Amino acid sequence: MSVILHIDGHAGEIPAGASIFERAEALGVPVPTSCVRHGRCKECVVEVAAGMDCLSPPVDAERHLRGNFRLSCCARVVRAAGTIRCHTMRRGAMRVERQAFNLPVAVRDWRPDPAVTRDGDRILLDGVEVDRGRGPLHGLAVDIGTTTVVLRLLDLESGEVAADASFENPQRFGGSDVMARIHYDTHDESRLLRRTLAAYLRHAVEGLPADPRSIYEVVVVGNSTMRDLYFGLPVYSIGQSPYRSVTELELAAGARATTSLAAPSRRLGLPVHPRARTYGLPIISGHVGADAAACMLAIDLAHEDRLVAVMDIGTNTELIVGNRHRVFAASCPAGPAFEGGQIACGMPGLPGAIERVAIGDDGAVAAEVIGGGPPQGICGSGLVDLLGELLRTGRMNSLGRLADGAAPFVVAPDGDQPVTFGEADISALAQAKGANAAGLRIVFEAYGIRGADLDVFYLAGGFGRYLGIDAARRIGLIPDIDSARIRQVGNAAIEGACLALLSRTRRAALEDLVKNVTHCRLETHPDFFDIFVEGCLFHPIDSVHSGAGARPAAPSAIA
Image 1 (tube, rainbow, N blue to C red):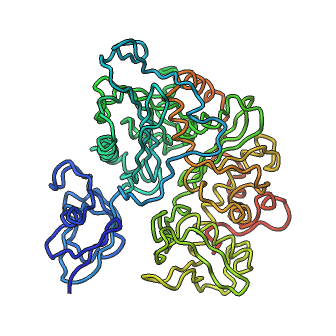
Image 2: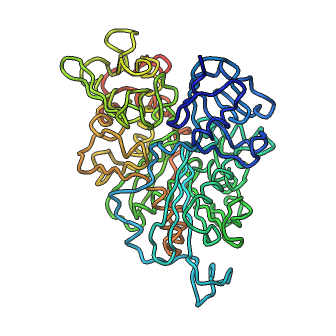
Image 3: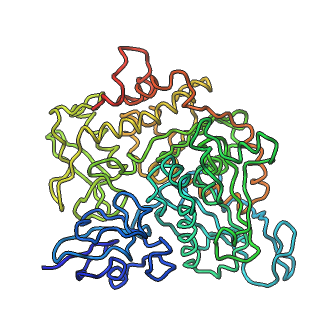
């Protein structure tokens, strides 16, 4: 009899009295820490998926954690037998989208025009000497997402990518969405969310294959909340109507000229050159943040004559529509459902996650699993496929009702436990989809177009990269347009951050562009609730608001 610990793809026995941290180290799993297992740094967070009853009760050092999160140095085994399944926030196998594809502008196409330059052995930042030497000049682009964080190290003289890294955003202990984190940070005087993220970024920078002192500038993007939290700004105003960053409020009051941010990198906790600077791209408005601005840079919107849209689907979906003449933007509060949250068998894009689903004429389910092993759950792309297949085969109607009533649909009977999908899961996904569909409809109508008028529809982000296009169109998650006009571009935000890092010209142009974006505030639209409810229906998007038939029930009644 023994307790078996499963952590980040490793497994082994863990004796009574031992901590998760101690056993993880013995198994070769690196757990972030700065205090050497004394519970002070709060960095060694793990999320316990199973076996919480095998662990000692939370101690005072863990009072900031909610749900299934524990500090691995404090969680000790108290049983003689059982199974513990958990993971750190640095899962190397997690599918994080680090690259961008099919973009009109690529970093390698630009002649570097960085703020960091060389004059003999003098190293200059905006023309001011900050160092002397003949070593490499590096810059760091960082995309701080609600769920994941991506870093890219660039050679500022050649424009080439030297390395990249990624990890889960450790702020998840404060909630899975931005509103939860705003609430957490507002009531936490210790600013633990910022300190924890800064510590993880420090570890990531130290792990890059370059001397951190050769990094002279850092460019950060993220939604308004993630960006402001990192720079240490209060985020309370982003969570309250009219949902604006303090930088927006100060801009409106004439106290600043831009919503972009700049600070000494060392003050933000980065182990880079002592005189390095960190620049945060400007936000557009409200929850439409610096990541959306970076996407505009990546698709070269300032020089675009075609009518294009870019949609980065996530816990907080960003939508940009327009061209160089006119740009509209919106933020859609989708929540974590399409990233596996709030779904009974949902999980991130890890080995063991079902990522593709097809249902045959005989009802047999064919499922593709990341890593090829037994299925442990289903991730976002698999959920969209499953919804599309259930709808196509008549096993689910447009209201999200399963044909056989309340019985969950069995996706995969094998594995540690069956992977099932019920009407409560459908309801959560319907509401996430409804927010995105409402954003599309409101922005399209404000712009005076339909989806069919778009020349290009960019799907950005990791979720968009792996999305099944046919299923996404069928359920009404994206516009029902020809596949030739849909481009899955991956991490456009990190690409935009790189462009800003490499080109002062492009950075200045973006500062001007964001000032001319019209922000469509969904929450103030007089018909938002009705549009949202219609968006919860599983129909191709242009048929959802065709005007035919009665309105459906409120989303709480769907499923």
